[in-house]
Every structure is written in C-alpha cells, then in structure tokens.
Image 1 (cartoon, chains in turn yellow, orange):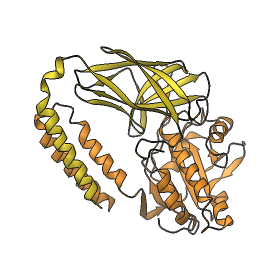
Image 2: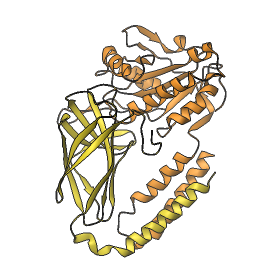
Image 3: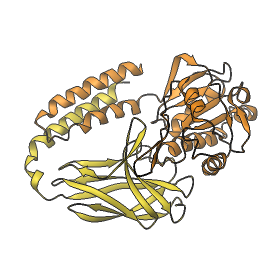
Image 4: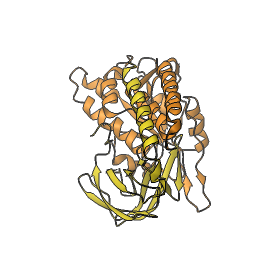
Length: 152
Length: 223
C-alpha cells in the first residue's frame, strides 16, 4: 500500500537535486512561459465559474498580474488555504518552476458571466504577465466532475 | 492505517527538503505535493471508530419548508456536505461527484429500487445570507434537483457542523465589500441502520470512490 508514495517521493527529491544544481544561472534571465492543462469545469449556474491551468517557466521569474475574458465582467485570482478562499492581487511564477492553478488550491473565479458556459465550449482567457505580456489561452469547458487526475 | 501512511509521507517530505538543500529555492512546494499524492492514493473513505450522532438540525429547504434532518432522514443512508453556492471550485465539484456517483449507482442491479430510492444527499449552506431557499434551489438544479438543500440561521448551521467535527466560520466582509465564506472539507455518510455518521470523505474523493462505496453505504456496511 505504501509503495507508490515512496517512489513518488524519491523521484521528487531526485528531481529537485537535478533542478537545483543545474540551472541556478537563469534567475535573472527572461521568463519563458508555457501554459498547459487549462480547463473550466461546467458550472451549475451562469453566476460564476472557476478556471484552472499550469504555467511552466523555463526562464527567470515573472508575475501573473491579472486575467481577463470576454466571458466575464470580472475575473479574480484566488488561493485556498485550509478550505478558506482568499483573493490575491498577483501570483509569482518562480524561475525554472511552475505556478499551479488546481482544484482545492489556486483558482480563477469568473463572475458577471455573459452566459452559462456549457461542456464542449471553449472560453478565450487572457493571462497578463508583468514581463511576458499577455498569453491567450483557449480554455475548454469540461464536465463538472473533471479533474486532470481522473481525466473525466 | 491512514495515520501511519501520512506520518510516512511527512518523513519522506522531510527527506525531500534535506536533499533539495542545494536546490533552486522553490523546493518548498514539492513536499506538499508528496503528501497530497500520498493521501490521494490512499483509500478515500475513513471509517470512524467513534461515529458521529446525526446533527440535530431543523432548517429550511429549497421550497421554503421546514426540514428536520433527524426526522426526515431517519433510517435512510444520508450524505451530508457543508458548503456554499458562491464557491466556484470545491463545493460544486464535491456535490457533482456525489450526484454523478448516485446516478451510476442507480444502474446497480444488486440494489433494489427501494434501496436506491432511500439515499439522501444533503447540502447545508455555510453562507445562509446569500444562499436563500431559491438561490440554493437554482444552484442545486444545475447539479441534481434531488439533493436536499438546507439554509437557515448561521449559528444553528455552525453548531450542527461542529457536532460532526466540521469547523466553519461565519462569512466575513472584506474591505472592498467582497464576502469571503467558508466550506467544510468533508462529506459525512450516515448509516441507515444506526443513523450515525460512520464514514468520512476528504476533498480528494472522486466520482469513482463514491460510486464504489455508495452501494455499501446504502446497506449500512463499511466501504
């Protein structure tokens, strides 16, 4: 029963050592961002919706300063700690690291929606970064129970 | 069992910290990932040695009618979650997981129609000011209209939640006028045999976890 976590931990630790010792020089370089895994779970009503994605960075640090979308009059950034949702002004994208927006943790909150997003739709979302400028993401609307772990 | 494995994960997390001493400084994220991977790979259900009594909650349902939780769910398998509708992430995910699992269990040929019909899913709001009966009804309609949605006095909800080990704070207003609310992190399953809350699920429980366990819970058995 304990086998799988043990492997995970060992691999993670090994990954850290390699990452830590190999790439120390890029901290002052330009950020190189890649946004993956974006999705919006189909919401129960047209009042509000959440959005998730991962920003991978193979360069220097950057900051996610705001998010906009035609779907919503208002998009805010939130973190969740111990079941408590807090609005955040910005999120740091660490150098040679990643910024995760995932269920139970950080999430985007879309309010004042133009309509109720339905599964299968794509929502155009603009992520605004301090250094990298604007990155547009086509965020697919997935089933209400979708998570990247289960894949459905 | 779960306690033991979490302790092991903590040890491994500590080891990851040590090893990353020469790292890039963002290693702080990683041990947390190890712990959550650990609990995610464990069994979703925690069967309680000391079951909870069903909370003595008399509230208002989505039709504006009085709902006495103990009286109206007596002898029925019942799942209870404390959350609020102005919650984009965990609350709808949790409720949808339960709703989809319930639909799948409706296809289960091992259960009688009466057994399937006996299941009650109850959503109790932690934000009763905003979650009026009609707001709650509209939100649950988008998930599963059969879910019982309850609202009422916050102090009553908070006291009821506390009796099943769920601590919630009243919604607070931020400086900019935005309201921050709090949701529980667990779903509690009550047995039709004893009416006691004997199984707890964390936030990471999936549709598959609930689909697998619900037939047992419907019969009052341990998942």
